[in-house]
Amino acid sequence: MTELSRIRNFSIVAHIDHGKSTLADRLIQLIGGLTQREMKEQVLDSMDIERERGITIKAQTVRLDYRAKDGLDYVLNLIDTPGHVDFGYEVSRSMRAVEGSLLVVDASQGVEDVLEAIVTRLPAPKGDREAALKAMLVDSWYDAYLGVVVLVRIHDGVLKKGDRIRMMMTGATHSVERLGVFRPKMEDAAELGPGEIGYFTGSIKQVRDTRVGDTITHERRLCAQALPGYKPAQPVVFCGLFPVDSSEFEALREAIEKLALNDASFTYEMETSAALGFGFRCGFLGLLH
Image 1 (cartoon, rainbow, N blue to C red):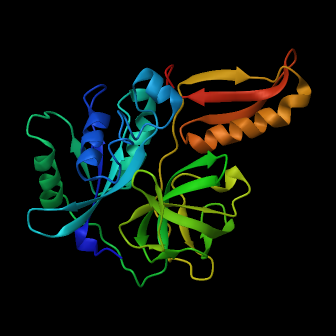
Image 2 (cartoon, one colour; image 1 turned 180 degrees about the vertical axis):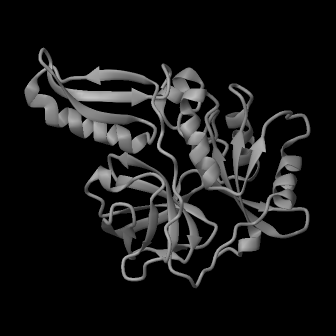
Image 3 (cartoon, rainbow, N blue to C red; image 1 turned 135 degrees about the vertical axis):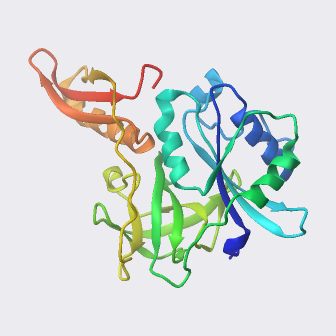
């Protein structure tokens, strides 16, 4: 377990095409856990469309181990964020999970100076290891092999493999089956403590059971107060989606639920049309979204 004073949580923010993902690449290349063969441009951008367009759509996290000039070892939890306004909800959620942000303005000073500034200027996270578990659900997505994967930031307490947890917003309970961090590849961990950012998978059958901003606690030892969570996204562009055949409605519903799990800013509700039948009215934050 890493001492709280040795943890730094930060996100990288900047305008479009100002080098956020490139800076993240250099940080990972310098101190990350990837070999030269595994290293590639936009290493944190895992979606095909991100690589095709050269933009970041989903905020991605990675845990880095850094030995500073003071001789101490630090854990840096980095979140790379999108730059386009259509994906601003990803940025706002990421900033709620960290203590500070790195604003990319000028990259002439070098990566080492950036790392030292993060260690010396950003505050360490706060938390009580002995308190009841209080963790924020930062993000979630659907994996074809693992099922629902949940990204969490631990505020108080300890999350361990095998724990029974409760989602305070929905009341759903689950067992933690796999626990770990991103380096940026998935790496299993025995536990996650205060200040740490990691992921878990569990017995989550319904994608609607995981809501971004929800507070996660232990089933038998509830935390006293839930975290504030996030404001819901306000869509500005809408479209209607209808199945070609009415028999495919449930398949469309399942696909839309998985999309909503992967993208918290995407909204949808059922609607009917005399010509098209049952379908969904979907809301987006912009045309690019």
